[in-house]
Length: 417
Image (cartoon, rainbow, N blue to C red; front, side, top):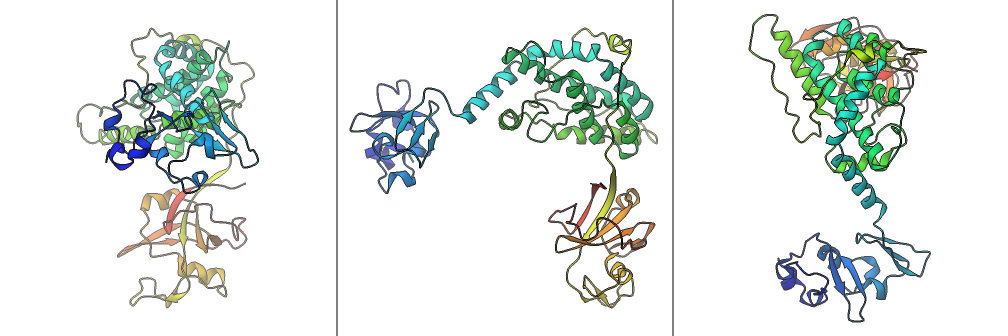
């Protein structure tokens, strides 16, 4: 519904002179467009129609209340956003936008400078011995490296371009973080997308001071604010689809062992802020020719792959239980072996997940009640059962569930420290 029809009295407070160029008659009641208002006393401020018609607490029941007239301890920013301070009695209008809008504007400037930063990012990669070492190690370690390398390099260019753009926008003389830290963060991100069996060896090519691409912020000085603002504008720090792109490309190459199915599938990088760089001149040998001095690899944190089952309270087993059990589920008076027999099956786990896992966690009420080794599996109608032995003294016993998910079955990698 039009704002004019739903709130005629508020509509008359729209500032005609300051809203020149806006078709006020067609503005909807739920519009987020920032407009100028003028109360009967003469106060002027900016607000959206949706905010103007809201029943905010500070209005004290008066829908037509003016911010200046009523709201104590209120800061109004130039962007129209407000912040109330209960401890103050003054009302202030600030000429600058609020912190969130400033971060968003800053992030937009960074993204606008992304394409122009590509050439500098490519030069950094070509001149970096860390990047050359990583790619050389991968060529010897990662199967199908040549096929996935275009995706990997595109990601490196993408992230390094962001740091170059930040340098440009903030008028810095150099990158805000050491090159090894930025490239190391990209390397760790790539390792997350590679197969488990090659990660440990590849980890020896990651520099010691590598940062880490968190899901909402860049490593280093640029933390939550810039990261969240970039994410809101559609720039995913982790670039989540990267893992799927690499996996699909590897699966395609694996199928080529048995039958030729044509060219590699195309990967659509549109709208993912991947700058074009293929046309730029390259000198990949420059970094490779540079001797690495005092290079120390980042230590690989101890990790172990595990299955997890969340058990309900003890209850009678179903008729014709494939494992011959009379009861299933958790009971505090069970021995480790009895609990293991109740919890080791029958579950709909993937056989490759079982093969890749070292231990199985039995969890009750979000707490690990038993850890067991995995030595094999047996297939049954409706699922599979795990073979193994209880580990009663395992350090994860009685600890919170490290693979906490709403799903009663889980598979993942956990820390052992």
